[in-house]
Image 1 (cartoon, one colour):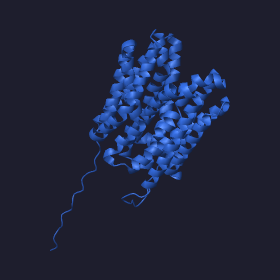
Image 2: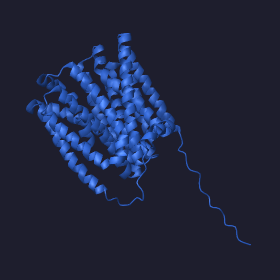
Image 3: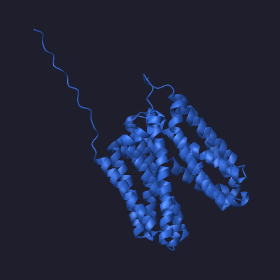
Image 4: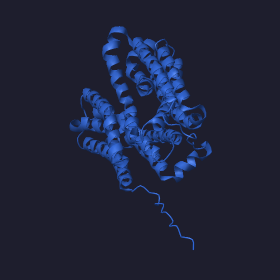
Length: 394
């Protein structure tokens, strides 16, 4: 539910409502471009701050603070009519969303049973897909009758409800059934980058997020433009994104359970293969396989964050898992930025988007290879401790 509020509403409700808001508040194309850039930068800044603030302030405080901030800003968005104030609110919402996800990762990693951890994390990460679906319902059912301001107010009311439930949950978690002797260690901020560069699990998690950002962000940015280039109906893009959301709602729980039962390598290989096959089919025939590409996108994008966090939690403490997950969000954003820049260059150089989506399909195949390599690795087991036989005294 926190993911629905922070990501579904905080990051994506504006994009859904902007065609209806633009005339009322006089948003120009420059304003929209600035909002897109600032929210991405704010999300990266929030992810970087997470590694510093998380261990110091505690994730319970961060979760309540980000929930309170997001709820207040959602209510505020219904009243704002000045473009620069809207930019500021959306920028704060984006930074809050990044910190909120890191807090969720730490709380679940600390309190969930090891055999259910990836299921819980993956189900939580799919909350963004549920937010997509609720945004669609707001546009279809609320806005035509009550107006776009009421959509923001309903989002704020949902945030207030989630905040109360979160507060009650965190209070119940303050009394663990089994007391721990020492708090779980965190990675000092000065050594976080070295840890990511030197340790295989942390490095591969960040590499996966970089490749995922490189493929998914240009796909979402250029999909409708590519369909239009092919002379296809605009409704096909709508159906594709509906498929993405519906798949993400279900995939979170199913793939997380697969990770807990069969291993994280298997789950990563399955979701990466589904995404790559969908992109390859889409490149072959966009008209026939657009929905297949949407299915693969939803299968991979939403559960990936929870599966990776569950995989990290098998090696690192809950706090360190949160810190590395924050670094993963940064690399995802960097990959998405590079992918969009490359897509723009290829579009200008070739005059077509065919090369763009072929490149994305190639990068998705690299993800499959990384997943296959992880699956092929055997976990390193500590050598068994053998008892030293007693020698009888003479």
